[in-house]
Image 1 (spheres, rainbow, N blue to C red):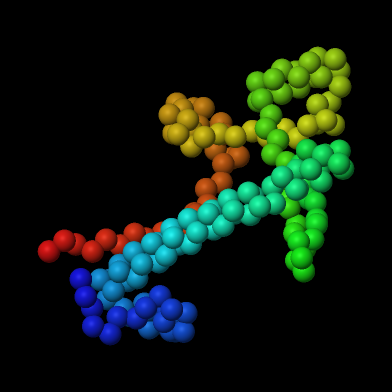
Image 2 (spheres, rainbow, N blue to C red):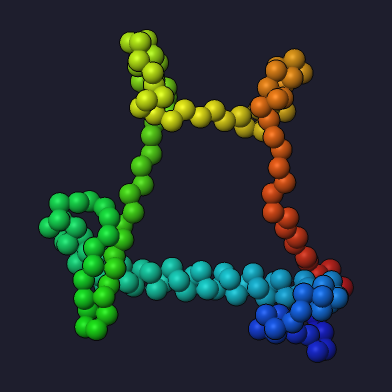
Amino acid sequence: MTIPNRPSLADLARLPLGEIVALSAETLALLQEEADETLRRAKATKEWLDGALDRKYGAIAAELRRQEGKDTGTVRFDDGGVTVVADLPKKVEWDQEQLAATVERIRAAGDDPAEYVDLAFKVPERKYGAWPGHIRAAFEAARTVKAGKPSFSLKAKSP
């Protein structure tokens, strides 16, 4: 579908919001498709570049971390006139069943587990919806519902 005088994505940054809102649904759908494709390409390009940087600097950064006696974290080094900051974040995962058992052992020993761990309860909305009414009522005061960020997907109709 070709729309005469259709603004480009670059034009959007310069247009007042009111003018964008006034565009036809067809034009907005095309701009949304273009923005999604541009974002997809940018993400793919960024992943490609990140892979190249890892290939170029990953071994150097790993060796520097090894020399500093650490498996993760940030190291810095120079490559010509550029300082390379290589970060390898720590990603910790905890086995929830083992944590729960440990918390119970701490509690059984007479200690307060809150001194050692942060305790949090989660109720998946799917489970909440399946509860019988009397159980749901018992939890109602602890439940707050907030709206998330709205999203809209526009698809041009095929002729």
